[in-house]
Image 1 (spheres, rainbow, N blue to C red):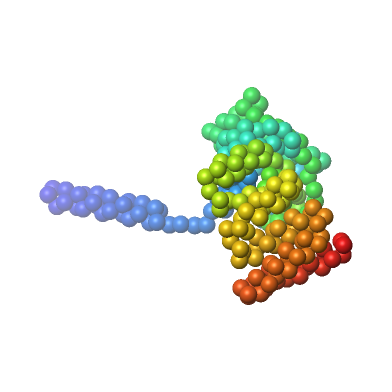
Image 2 (image 1 turned 135 degrees about the vertical axis):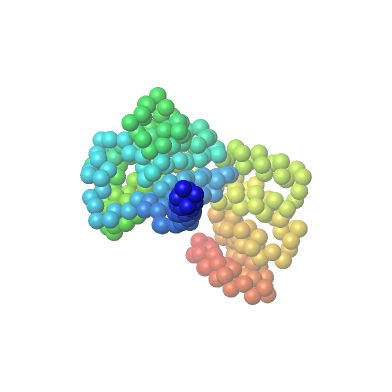
Length: 288
């Protein structure tokens, strides 16, 4: 009897050890995710826009109209829903969307797509419980055909300017582009005013912003002149001044200033600014 009990105990111990080993192997075994998660982030306006999504692949399948049916809500990726975070208020296809984090759901169609920004982040990929009252914004966009197939579902930030960009959805041979706009002028102007009250260094950045965004050129010229007074060897500042002068149709002044920038750039052996100034001088001479 004692031997039988010992054998049973040893069997239980061995079975327990085997179970632990199997669990350990299962926990350490890693295989590639079929639809890997990706997080992308883009500096936009005065903040960063972030998107989290999973990326399924075509794998020889017919995607839109089959794997992803037309006329039905899609989680816009794989696994859970795609999530986007806007730290500032924006406009999507001209429609306002307040700052926040949203799930992106779509309803693909052959000729148009609905794109929905959804406030319930717990819904995830199970769209059977989708509720229209949780839609914060719905916009309609037209798909376009791609000449080259995109094997793995991709979301891009594209065509970025200080206040506008496109968010692209690309998969198989289909592209969707969402126009995004943010209003930054008022914030930037207040920031410039506050900065210039305390410090002279932002004059160059302030002048650059005014020039790049079509603001008052006389103010931009005044600010870049102040910046140059503090840094008279800064060839890049003279180059900006020359661009401002040229835009104000002062071609003679632009040529003189660009020549000064050119000489300083040669002293510093900066070939890029040498070329930029030579080009600007040539364009300004044509304008005379």
